[in-house]
Length: 354
Image (cartoon, rainbow, N blue to C red):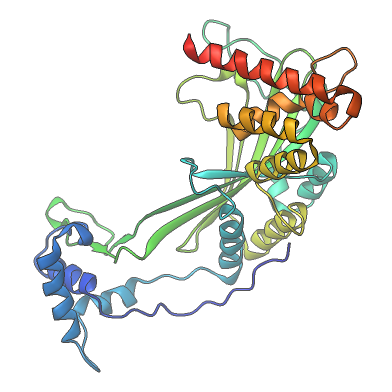
């Protein structure tokens, strides 16, 4: 995909009822409540107050907003627009703050391209010990090195957080200053954080797998940093978010654009999230199947979920090495595939009753 075209423009604000309310709360040195929860009468009063401001007049808080407004560089804005475009592929019903993007490129080629830019400098060495140092009393004693493992694949995860926006108006926080030293912004303005993370998956061939992740973290106020972590299910426990972390806050605009260009290249012309691809492939399978097979697949979808149904349909079930999806496309095995689907449905329902 092409990198988004961006332009950095000063923020334009209209005097709204919410701004009139925030201005009053700041004048009274009070923490504002959520505007839409004030009640209809209060909102009507503030909307009326906002309408009294005319040409050349506005609440004092508007001057403070302009004083403390910050703007990202064009490189950060470009990367954020790219992250926004990819994050928009997240299913609206998903409760997660991230979306996984399909990468069809050869993982070794992606890794080599990453090594050529600044972000790649955070990659661990091939012979570097990546296991958590341990005597075996808590964490297992492992030997995790990339030169003893096979690179199996690569993936991309895009995170997005949009929080209520506020800024601190001084550098020395004293107890009596609160909330005077906090400037609260209208609810339609957010403090946005995005992270694009490239993940490389390895397997040692000894039932030990791990991944190395390199991410670019950017905020709407223009800051950026690179980070790295190693993740292994061998260490998975509550609160575990990887280990062997590293950070680089000395990130130039050129570094940000180089990372963004790599991301735009490897997602392809029409990026897809993993759920999008699963849905598309399921629909293609249904479209090509016989009416009785279509009914069976739809029943499986209604009983489980798209991800689970896709897994059931594409895993190998017989000695011939054929999946249900493959059997359905062969006239001689289509009926057997349908029976397999209903067997899976019955087994699944049985599990739910336990």
